[in-house]
Each structure stands twice: as C-alpha cells, then as structure tokens.
Length: 162
Image (tube, rainbow, N blue to C red; front, side, top):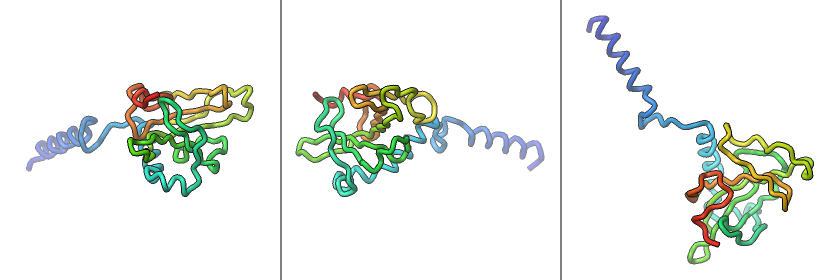
C-alpha cells in the first residue's frame, strides 16, 4: 500500500470511529452520566426488602403524583451526595408490593429561614431544585425507574394517580 492510500485509510477510519452518532459511543451530557451513576448506586433498592433492612422508613405515607417517601436517616446530613439520595420513592403495585419509582435529594440548609441558593447538584442547570417552605428543605426529584412525561427532574409525576 502506498503512503497516500495509508493516510487516506487512517483518515477515513478516524472520521467513522469518532462519529458522535455512533452506536458504540453514545453522546451523553455530564448530567446524564451522573444519572447513570445514581441509577447504578441505587439499583439494589429495587428490592424493597433491602431498603427496609437498611433502615429506610416511610416518612410521608402516600403522596399523590409521587408515591411513598422512604428516608434513610443516615443520609440526612445536609450535603448533596450523588450516590446517596436521602429519599427513595416507592409506589404500591396492584398487589400492594412496593415498586421503586424515583429518588429525592432533601437538603436542609444551615439557615432554613434564609435558605440561600439551591445546592450544587448535577452538572449543568437541568436539575431544578425546589425549596419546600412547609418542611424547610431543598428538594430534587429524579425519576430513575418510572418515566415522567414532565421530565426526569420534575417534582410531580402525572403518570401516578391522585
């Protein structure tokens, strides 16, 4: 193979192997990679018994358009930790078995009467924190297991009934 053909072959290979639309190299945003890390870190809680055995407790009862909020008191430290959300949301199925649908970060600010800016969460500005005045904490829902037509970071999920 002459030098010109070798250079052309390398160039063609480079163009096709670096194509952003390639099936082998998904083009994910930083926040999407972080969501994948979160999903991996919380996958064991799909088994409701694992969550209960690790100390997660129902702190809300059923909340319309959300489900039950199970809190892990050990994670309630006022710090955003990507892999340790403070709350897991479960929804009972038709047989009453709890199904994991989402997680929630719940951060109590140093001064709840003057909460300041929301915590630094996922990379970028796609995550929308909400300050819950009633319980004085920043909250961020991430619908990791159930599709939410309003978006992965929306607080309420219209697919869940009242």
